[in-house]
Image (cartoon, rainbow, N blue to C red; front, side):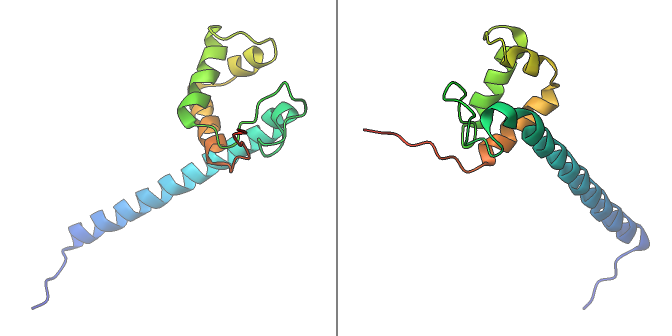
Length: 116
């Protein structure tokens, strides 16, 4: 026995699917904007992939834990962590941008190794 779907149910299902698609599209646009910011701004010191800092004084960001990266950015922004280069960079970021950058770099494959 086949059950019929009402018009109202069908509209709700289609609307839900459209909302999910719009959300995914907006998220993809946000991800692209964060990746662009990382490559244009962060790359100047940390390298285009977060693995190749321009000097040994700058850390590798790729593969670091999300929580650590976000905590560090917040600390630079609040002044709890002092650095004359990072403080103004973090000051210019919104919380959403800091979260996005932390997510972006935490997802990049890292090349950090532990030497024994």
